[in-house]
Image (cartoon, rainbow, N blue to C red):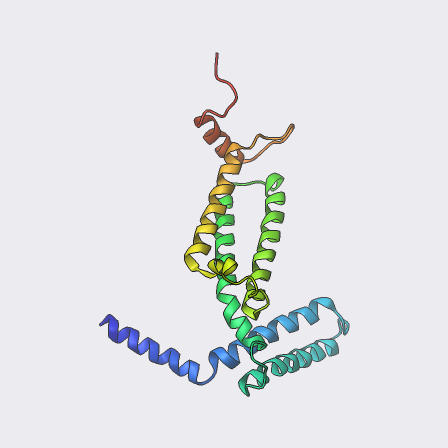
Amino acid sequence: MPNGYTGTLGNVFQSFQNIGLQDLWLPFALIFVLSYVALQKSGVLGDSKDAKKYNLAIAIVISLLVVIPHVTRTYPAGADPIDIINNAIPNVAVILVVIVMFLILIGLFGGKAGWTGSLAGFIVLASAVAIGWIFLRAAGYLQYGGAVLNFLDNPETQALIIIILVFGLIVYFITKEPREGEHGGALSGFFNALREGFGGGGGGHH
């Protein structure tokens, strides 16, 4: 029964693939949405209703200019932006899931903005570096490291690095000393309790 279900589901997705879902429609939708939002938010053509129509037309043209050469296979080898996007987005999605889950854990313990501001900045910077690295690797621009950096493409190695980073953040918040005049929230109290439990509270009761 599971094999039949898998086979049927596979046939459905194969049908989607045959009509260009991955090579045409999804990339077109992604590029169109990003282009349209960028044009709307930047207000390059103004904020009038006519500008909205122009933004819509320009976004469609940009999307077609990117997708059509991919479908007709006229891009040079290794320079197809659709292939780069398809290769990079799964890894970007993994990073986004890890970040969201980490922030959910922070919210679960009631973290306050007093320390999440610096943490958020660190997460944004680290995410930007990681996503940039993923896209550059997918585009073939960081292939010159040879076997020295190839181990980073291993999913098991990536998972291990993520685990080490998460546990490193946990250890940091457990062992760090609060700044003078700093008042943390529930999460700060939680980590302080853990610190005292590990004997790092800096003194006992008399």
